[in-house]
Length: 247
Image (cartoon, rainbow, N blue to C red; front, side, top):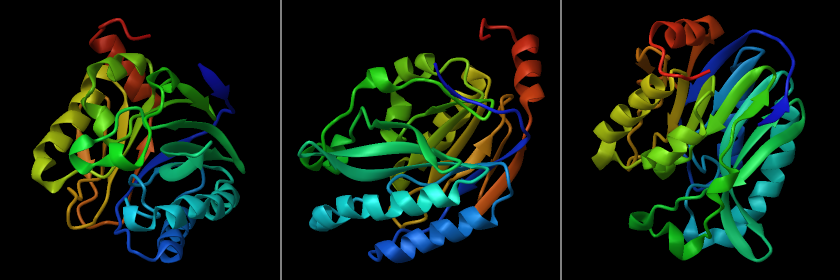
């Protein structure tokens, strides 16, 4: 388990906003929401929130990752920011999730399961599922599952022991009920918080929300930002009450 830690209290924050064709405008929207979030927040943005899956302008989208990355580093002082962005490495395009904290990228990995119904495999390469792991940031054990990865049970097991699982997503509106059920079940089975952020774009569920370890969930509804207090005691309480062997 990777570790970058310091003891402090936190709020969890799920974001919900539209991604437009204007990458800079999307970045400004995200930065404004990050700025508005409480100090000591863990913030999750929707999958590819800065560019969308803009395959017609893929070169432009991957180049924008470098611009956005530097601004997000500056915005991450006393905040944990989790999102995904398209990026090219050694001639291949990947969908990288990144965790920003205190001016640094403390964890990154490429999406390991591409959504073939959406033709992701035609434009991107898959990452290695071995890179799905728990990383400790500021005393919080965090895991990330990117959209379609939520459907793979073996990944739930890999993230057993997390305090928070972030789920940046671009989930199809036709499968809205699946997104609600899966994110809630993940919190109950892994007895942790799940911060799920989906896009507000027309084709998506718009069901961003935060689910507590005991299964109670609150969705953003029309709020661009939803904040709830992170309470480690709720995790400990649930794991003691319903002991299924999660340490």
